[in-house]
Image (cartoon, rainbow, N blue to C red):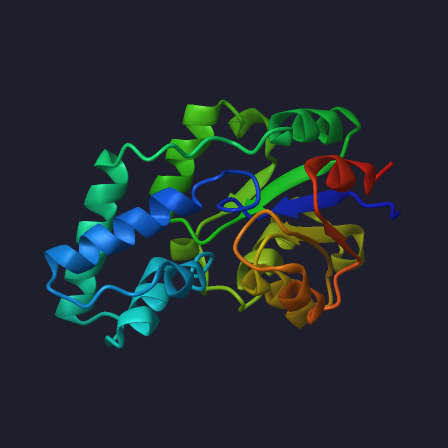
Length: 215
């Protein structure tokens, strides 16, 4: 479909099936802080945003305030200790090894913190495959394209030589703001209709379809 030098992936909901764990931990954190529980669908809408931006918006708090910081602390505590499974999606590891083996540069642009991203890169053994990565605490929250600009500058790749791959409108909105091509995937938080609003080159329903995009 296209010839690219760099594929930039979102993490949660794109490579890792962590949505259930994120939802559970937001619910637990809200309970700890005496806040009303949002619906699962409401929680899913903030996945991909930086933690402060997402939780502040979800609960009507001021980012950086004491109540918001406490909520973030409780979320992080539960995420470290929660046992909800969060495996890589089937086929994700094979796809990454295939594209890496073809000489395509791989990167991650995620709403996770640097600490959280480092943890999952090491736990999955995928760190050696990625040439660059950015967490939400190293740039502005999606859909601001700063983290994409940082990755392009670090790797010396032009915007028209890269593609952003993600499951949310935050991912595709970030790419569109920069004029970067994007690919949406439907196994995460947002459905095909919402992803299509951001005019991705492709919306993949399976990992096999995504893998074939660069054949």
